[in-house]
Length: 158
Image (cartoon, rainbow, N blue to C red):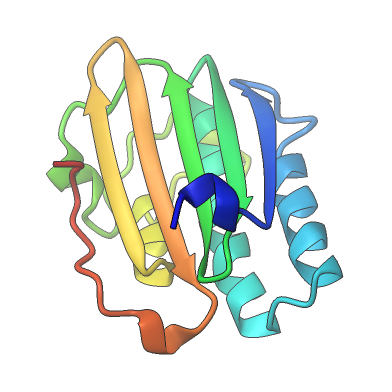
């Protein structure tokens, strides 16, 4: 079956780096859409965590990004593609508590070093790739029916 044929919903969001005024707006829209179509609350909770953490990382570190949000009969997919400094060491960035947040970010309550670990923990599929001085691509898949969850949570896109 072709992915386009099985697509239930798709929306593209533009996210601006440094725009703390609109921070979280894409995540709120994703959550509203999932509620509207009747996705179970425990799935909405996991998607919301993943979406918000990724969105805030973009706002704090990248120049700009897109979020391609889609729903298929089996899963919810969040694809973030940003233009920014990239992640120098993905393995280190995946460690709980590791943060490159500035003092200004910490003063706003961010920078605990739990963003990427929280995303990985709440996703069923997690792939990340990054190139220094270019940007980061993040794929998050969350199965609507948890019985489908038999995928490896790789850290890098093959």
